[in-house]
Length: 488
Image (cartoon, rainbow, N blue to C red):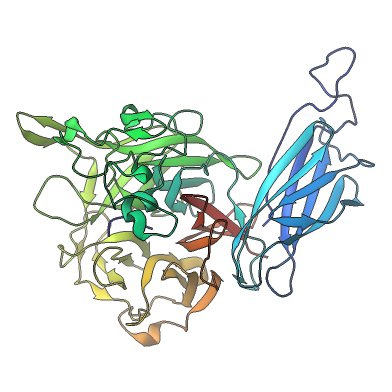
């Protein structure tokens, strides 16, 4: 989402018991690690959540006969019962009405050992999918995480838009329920309150960190860009990449940025052109350059080396001129070039994108002649799956399943069968099918208020995951987060 305009694995390898010889190491057969698995039970919404805590000793063997305490914030949990060696199961009933959407945080505890997981409870979940979850690891914070995509092999995740502030409240202001202040005003509380981290381990080398003066004050000038007066809000924003860990979580964050001191309208909508190889990835993304005559985002191609900080260029202000160092990126010469272009995807020989701005809310396609990035393009057309009375955003092409994923009005993630026909023809698409979505309008804190940004990964062990972005209304602010759900 742009502001211009489940097996859940939660590892914990901590010593729970001590030995006489070395108090830092658990004794053999003592619990040393917990893995939580969440499964969605069939039935009417809100779907009950089956929680299994798998407890192992330091040598990886299951530990039986334990008294496991399992609790749920946002729901009620039944007593945990050992159903197999080291596997303790409980059923959690969300404290939500049938049409509501929210989070349920579950915790398993035995002795001094504990593990947490967060279920994303949605009123609409397709039969093919399990229990949606909040992505574990260092991806999600109390700040804004948005515009995310997982690599096709599930090994890498890019969060294109991260900010320690609440970008929704900042950009929308008091017009958004629960927010205060004027929209994009540098003096508004929502543009200055820092909720998320801006340093390691979660967000190392955060651009613009020096502009965060306190938890309630941000410097909205950027002399590096010639912005010498705080005329409008410019909270720090950057993209971050993450590597998948052995337990299924994501960690090892690294920044992806143009050097412009955390300028708010940074590159966004990163999408992979195939699975990375040894960390090398080709990507498309959207960006509105600060130099040149264009005044709306365009689409770009870049080759990245994942796992370490990535520089996409640099701006400097010298002698009253804004200087752009040579950027290691290539603009896609779409025809026409001037409209708002955002959230690209590539599949079945076409570049797909949306116009997530103050323009037509449809999906668009353009066909390149030749290999990217040095291709020429046919004239851009509207994808025939777009409907005049529906706002379609954020296309993602899943070639392996011959499906087009997209968000409709940020209320659901839908798919349409598409196997490569002319995207300008209605006959090339199947009827939309809702995969996950919202139902009742949100009413207050704790509610999930929006969902979008679909992407799909297939792992080496045969699992298929749908990743997405969702927003929760907290007390006084909104929290953008990354979720995922595994195919059954």
